[in-house]
Each structure stands twice: as structure tokens, then as C-alpha cells.
Image (cartoon, rainbow, N blue to C red; front, side, top):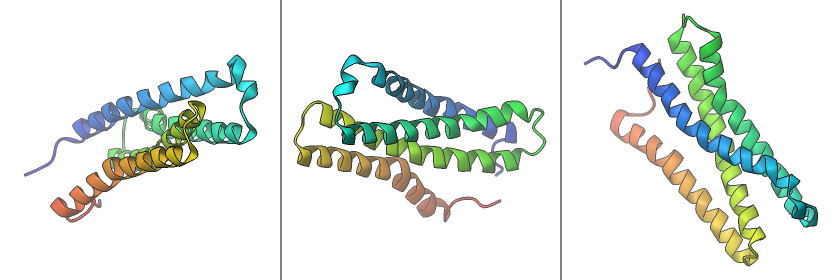
Length: 154
């Protein structure tokens, strides 16, 4: 049995990116406006460093997750779809790592802003890191390994 045509695989990849990009864009939007809030000047120096790290991780994830769409647009007509898919997959994986970091750091910021005890903020961001690591990374990779013997190599 053969797989779906190359064009269908590329369409699926780009459709999945549209979903990831919305999350990255929304997080970025909120982070961009945060320093312009009147109360931001009262934020402790350590919280500003957390904000800066969160913002940078979010921006990097947005750039990496949007890169495949730009590559697809600039490389039309697509002459080397397999190479494009490999590059896009790498960009999405690295972008997702940065998005994971941004989400964990944003959780740290929110937990601190609402005044939760330090132990609870550690528990929340650790729990989120475990959830992301399990659902975004371990589950699909273990399924791929278990069902198909690992990722497909071209």
C-alpha cells in the first residue's frame, strides 16, 4: 500500500502549522503588550528576566513555526518536496521546543503574578512541563517507535 500523494502530505503539514501558529501568535500578542501596562514598572527584576525569557522563547517559536509557510511560498513551484518536508519538520520540532519553554515560563509568570506560594508555582510549571513532555513529545514518539519501529527515514 502506498502513502498519500506528496501534495496531500504537504497540505497536511501546512494545515497543522496553521493550528500551531495561532497559539504562538496569541501568546506573542499578549507578551508584546504586557510591558506597556502601567503596573509593569512595579514588577520585580527577577520577574522581568522571566518575562524576557518567555518573550524571547515565544518570538523564536513564532519565527520557526512560520518559517515553513514562508519557505513554501518562496519556493513555488515546489521542485524538491521531500527536502522541503525534512526542513519543515526540523523547524516545527525546534519551534515546538521553544513554544514549550514559553508556555512553562508563562505559567511561572502567571502563578507569580497572582501571588501563589513559590512551592505551588514550582508544582504548576513542573506539572505543565511534564504534561507537555508527555503529550507533545513522548506519546507521539513512543507510538511511532512502538507501531512502526521509529521515525521514517528517507
